[in-house]
Length: 204
Image 1 (cartoon, rainbow, N blue to C red):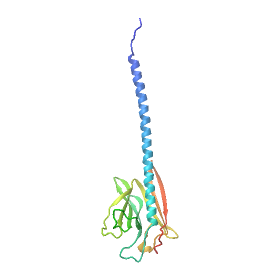
Image 2: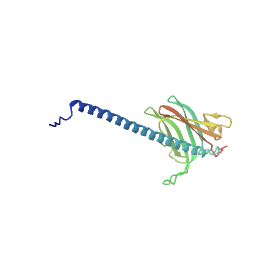
Image 3: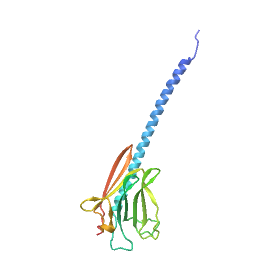
Image 4: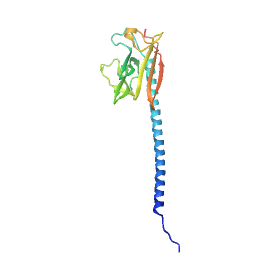
């Protein structure tokens, strides 16, 4: 007579082991793909943030304003070379043109912008501070412009050489050209990006 004896314990154990191995391989592949996707997405977001930051600084430097005869509202372009948290960095402060906000018609369109490095949770962030030149409120808040930055360096060309410091109160003119270099960490490696901009106003 035909007899159905079912699966033996050994067969069940082998099936369970094979299922576990297959599941582990599938889950490992899935999470590897997800991590790769997250890294790619984070990298693209960082590149967009970097590109937007360099383009903003380029436009602001190009529209920098300076008039040595205006003592009431001095227009300035100042670059300070300093060592922040063990990293060489610059502070950039300039008077530049900016379109006034639609909802606030009292803005003049001439702003004082300051870029500097700040540290938070052991990470460096490039901050941007902006205030209207003719505003009575001199206090303004610095906002993070770009996070997870390694270095922010501004150099000015005086016509013969590149220098790391500039002050229109001393030089009495805008630099001939400005070079901004930003370093970021990408997958454990340092990547460097540079932008050049020329002020359209001589300021002399």
